[in-house]
Image (cartoon, rainbow, N blue to C red):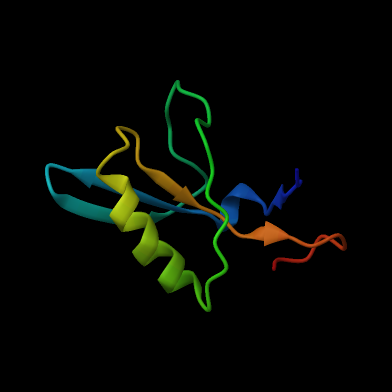
Length: 78
């Protein structure tokens, strides 16, 4: 078991796939009435790589995928 603290929502990136067209936007979160169904924690060299991986997942999620960094115990972005 592990615990992770997400960074502030303003640091997130939303990845959505609509009919095969991927849209990547900066923003606080994905507007949806659903709740978080799961999470992947990936160690990437850059935010761009994390977004690239999220595009692979976005087609299977109706509301898209949110990419957000984690915080360390001092509250700093990891």
